[in-house]
Image 1 (cartoon, rainbow, N blue to C red):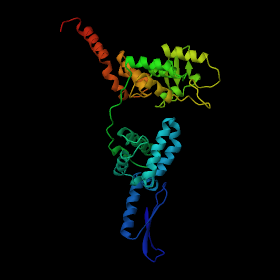
Image 2 (image 1 turned 90 degrees about the horizontal axis):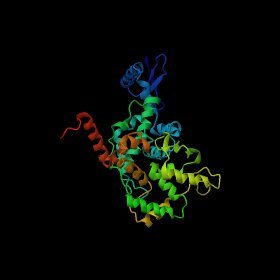
Image 3 (image 1 turned 60 degrees about the horizontal axis):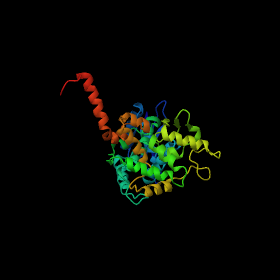
Image 4 (image 1 turned 120 degrees about the vertical axis):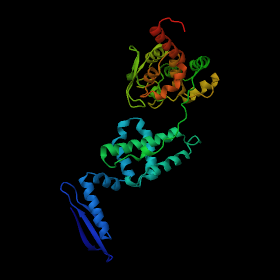
Length: 355
């Protein structure tokens, strides 16, 4: 029940202290200048406690966004592997911008203002942050709020859900033509960097990311069985990569010629993976290939798969994507395969009937 006690504060003013006591719940105390306000608060608080609404209300008022982010960084981010490093920086940005506000005061409008500020932020490359990157900032904060709602009971709703996500540009699809591919491989073969050819062929034949290739260790490579096991991928799941053809032959030769005990398939200095950026760019320049990045080798592999009849689902499995959305950009390259599927279905259903 709520009890109201009349008091005189140190300034000599009259005030009213309210105590709400209900069995099984901590005592709630508040002080007001007017008795009517004290009575109203006592009635509302008692009703909220009985309806099990009061705890979250108190938590969202008592906890700040900084508290939420700190706990998330401590308890959740360590479980995310490499992906957690980028999200840590994103969450630290939110903490610096609006971390001082209580969770109850963090509104969709406030988050939207920070979103718009991000769009005006200059990147290290001199341009402005794009919509896709800003959406990643929103996604990091949104998941932190989701955990606070579902698992910690700190707040009733996730305000990020009500913030409009930005339109993202269509994914880049730059892949090597047959002629470009041959020119690049020719330059890789004569490169002074001994690991460049194997790394490029591995990227083209498997669609592995640059970090997955350069971070590859020999204990994850099985030449005899023709497979690579990736333990740490961008989406946090294991992925089994087929190792066939020229890529398998090159790694087999590389394994046989090892002269040190380095665990890296592509070792560099000071027990770290090799740095191939400069050598790769030099090979591109000599081959006369413009507007191309190492990551585009992954796009090339996906494009070759599509043009050789692989379905969108099959490409997603090879590349290690959880959803099909990321690989739909290659769908137009498999039109001939799609037409073939429809033709086979029609022959099976209607036989050889004329049109």
